[in-house]
Length: 116
Image (cartoon, rainbow, N blue to C red):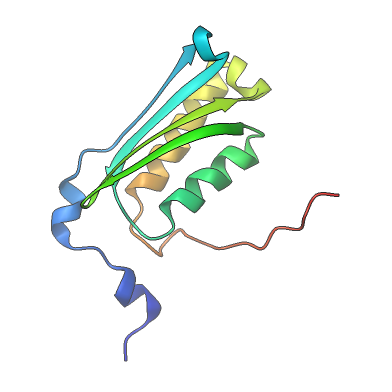
């Protein structure tokens, strides 16, 4: 019996899915649209949500599309951090790195306490 990571390893073909993270301000929705395209993997959505939470970015709406091994997710997000181009660029880079990690390698589930 192999390790848990053995079961989460994706086929080599998945790594050929082009990765992109694009954000743009959208006045019509009074927020930013964040679009993510990459190979699907276990825990990806959780990892992206955790990154947004760490940056105090509110997720208002999400459109999650999994097309075979390809993920095309779009989020409507808001937060003070998004007003800074430098922070926005760092956020995009962190999410792109998350998309590049193979399943199980960087995913560290954390138990969060309810905010009271």
